[in-house]
Length: 371
Image (cartoon, rainbow, N blue to C red; front, side, top):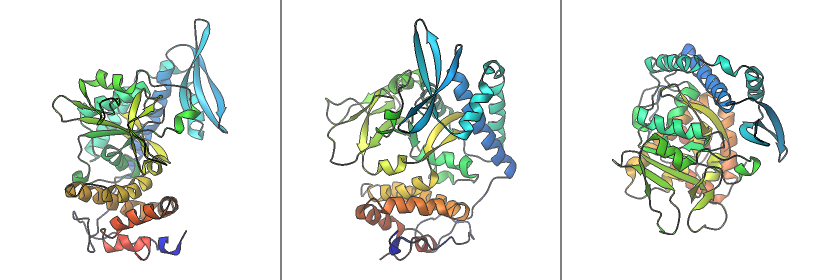
């Protein structure tokens, strides 16, 4: 890594502060109890088991396929004289344990949803940020269709809300408010799998409530956005833009929709984790790792319109919120993510550093001399 990109280590957290921009403002990390953090981990584990169990609608068996040098697991069922495969996910130690647990035991999940609701009640009472039921229904239908299982990623502020449970900390409500649901997928990732969302993303939205398609700038292009009739909830589908600019929208066959291509999004989607949305009996989604989310927001803040000052403050508030925690708990992860960002080119580093200079001095110091 170049010398001017060196991290100098984390600093202590001292005084509560709602103003996150400039000066020497600091914030207090307000951690949830170990008991509540354990409840979050249990909720994600139960949701992962429920996701796999939901694929086992009829008698069948698990099987592994190697694609691009990596193992991917499927659940195969015999339908008529043909085999139908449903994608489960890339092989991980946790997935292998869950598959072994579920073999022949799909009937034992009768009270699972009730157990998850009880966990969510505990988390709500403990001060975790909950997702409203209206947005929750949308995410439930997307998850049920397989959007997140097929490497669709929840990005934007709804992903930020998930980091409360992932990191075990309280988040400021002012940085977690939104009416937008942003779903992204890297076009390169679905090449490793052979499944599609069922139903497609737009049909899944229709099952949640009535959405109206927002016309693309070019009337000939398929839509990439939908909104409710009262305009209070909007869903956008995004995909990375790399190389030369792309005219129009881009098809995402695995999700059955088109997406709006955006610069810098490939960095955000390079590493993701499974997380729980706290609504109903829980929804299992996929979100960017928190360190990539924070560093990507440095660039997003610089690409806002000049009249979007409130959104810029929100972006940088989210950045500081996450960096204060991550630089205390997992500084090496931040260092690795920053190295990847600046290694993508001078423009990436320049845009990010413009935002770094607007953060409090103790955060700026972590990125080395501004130069």
